[in-house]
Image (cartoon, rainbow over all chains, first blue to last red; front, side):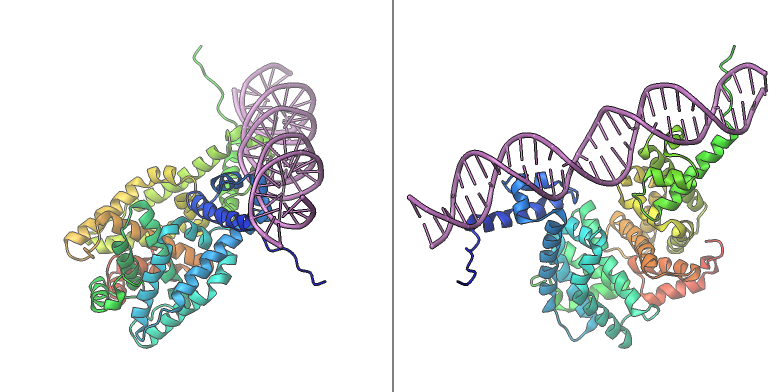
Length: 209
Length: 209
DNA sequence: AATAACTTGCACATCAGTGTGCAAGTTATT
DNA sequence: AATAACTTGCACACTGATGTGCAAGTTATT
């Protein structure tokens, strides 16, 4: 007969999800949280966690992958004729996706898995770079830096706002605006210019970002 | 008789210095480098390292303190009537002090010792904040953010250049200029404006910075 | 030459966390 | 009710690094 193995049990599926939830929660407070703690938070024993994930690394990778996919997907739909507005849109929506998982996000990008994360984030980074290049050739953005360098500084500018919000909380509206402002400033705009650009474009209002 | 204990031996002094040098070198490549490795690089056994430093933490703290003091001292002399130029000067000189120890610098500010580092860096941060406030009330800098927040973003902007230079090397001249540009952009200036300001002030030329 | 300072090697205790094997239980599914 | 899937507890091995005690050497200093 055909290898018809039983489907995974329902409770097992739930448990796996619970582990991922717990991991997201705990690792976002301390990226070094132990498997013991995570399993407990998920209502399981450490021993059974190993029934779902072969080891710590696998759990981490799955978790980071889920996050990366979510972000990349959310940003895939961002489009705008004006590359500057597009950059602001990307920044804003990124903030929206990531503000609740700041620590994990920083860990993903800077921690020991940054290489792995880089792979998953490739499409996003490519889009940012494209927007930067476009903006440079249209004369809207600074041209005193090569596009790839500027794109990386843009990323840092966005991360800086994540860090900042950890030090001194930003409400949703302020957060959205600040990522955009910081990115636009990095990319060459003066602060009034940047503020006006944001105000002039209703699509930059945080309702869909 | 008076407690006249012998002075420390000369070779011991040298060895202590060698350990600090080795630590600076190795920890700048990997902040988790083992004491074994550090001692070896200093030409000593791990066991004797403990004759100079009670434990890993002490070694780290001494090393970070030395670095912090060096930086704070180097920046203490920075002064300029124009707060914007002053910020640029601080950024530039900071880069000069820190470019050769990027990883350690990032570790100092973001790693597990960031609290300790914060204490040592207090005077510097205070000066940055003061410059930002001054620039805001003179109308030269953006006023859409509270001074302390802006000051922290300025710091992040400087760190971003450190990170960037790790990814894609910057020669001395380019580094100095880029920290300034990135800081000035963060603080509200447009990129042309920032560039012109730097060019207009010969004291911002990297020769003393 | 005497002395204190310093270095070394080795053995040992410690520690927190990871990953496994196994036997005995519980529970979803058929 | 039978079966496979899942969970659990416990014991254990392991790892990589830190920190200490001690006895025996070497070396700077007086």
